[in-house]
Image 1 (cartoon, rainbow, N blue to C red):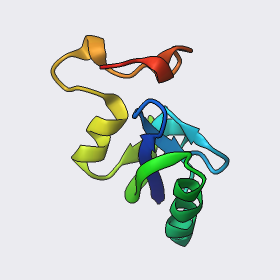
Image 2 (image 1 turned 90 degrees about the vertical axis):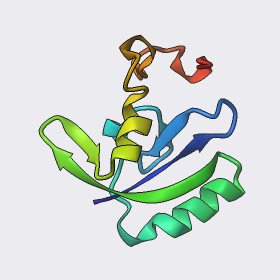
Image 3 (image 1 turned 120 degrees about the vertical axis):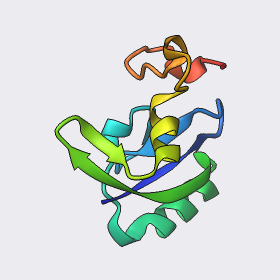
Length: 98
């Protein structure tokens, strides 16, 4: 599975490509296959996201899991302060400043 991650242009938040737009929740990620570079070019050109890149991932019973620890931390938030972890269901999450 190939998934896209990047940063929201407005807030800098880590976002994941859903197939239709960007989400704060890694579990909304869509498999982009070999189309990742084309999607990145289009989305960065439209100024919807910046610093986007393709990462390996896998679909598990718990949801989508990025293959590399760096992206897992980007998906879930800080490892030493659970109170600061991302809570995508929070309607105000896109406006958080950490």
